[in-house]
Image 1 (cartoon, rainbow, N blue to C red):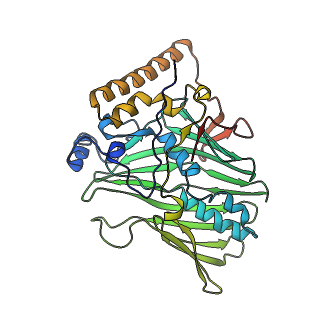
Image 2 (image 1 turned 120 degrees about the horizontal axis):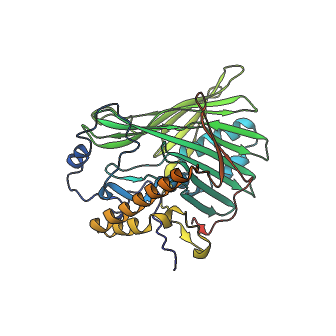
Image 3 (image 1 turned 60 degrees about the vertical axis):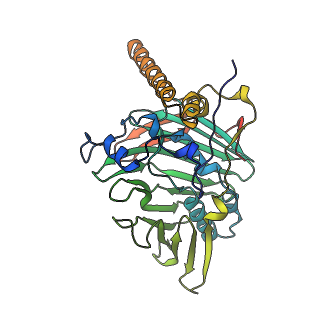
Length: 378
């Protein structure tokens, strides 16, 4: 039987089509509030189950992966073009900002199933993700570019909290970007996602991000600022920060801009200002990946696991969508019961996973490089 695979367009500056993002209900605010009427402020909603009308036709795994492989310009490879460690850190800052993508209020991706994967190639960059834990949700990412000698390792653990007027999704876990040609490793964290319900529905990235080069001691600090409570003001999608030497504490550059438009750096010695990131050039006009070799797609591929549900959502067949989602959830419960009855513990296939109370989750790829994928990003 031929594998059914459904892939949708990545998040980009352009609003997705109604077929991809529009919930069934005409009054989005009323419908969202109805979902949380019995949820107390401060509650962890990581296990909260959304009806299909509020799902976008893709898993959270694909959303993570898109931020790495879906760009109109090869901003990742450009990092190696920096002549000095400082130049390369500035390029890393630009790439880090590019991984922040617009989300639309009223819809959310699927919660990945345990062992779900996403495997995609773009040029010489190969990207592999695996859902290594379901409760709590933990996603692992490994990407390697064999031409540029670049490696990326992420371990993302999300913890959404309901505040009464919004849902703030805390994204825990260290992200590493390794430039093997230069012997440099950059460590960074992720901003948090704020889904505002009242008084003005909207979605923002908020919080502080630190990017640190272990070998050089150069550090960049970014602050993603939310708009005001009532949705007014010029701070929407604002990002600002600085680049400094951790040894001398001297500030070398100041960073300012809006992550959905342009971001600049200002040299503190010369006062020269230049644009380091232009969202229109990097995350606009993005297309859905294509399947080059259907037979080689793994059964765990997210675009295969959720294909029936995604098709139903895209065609707005909500009863069929509910049944498709129910089948996936029941299958997951059945597999968990089977493991428990046999006393078996599920083990990830592509990552070694550990947890430390102080440092959190750690996901180490089992293989040193990611192979070519049967799914291709354009």
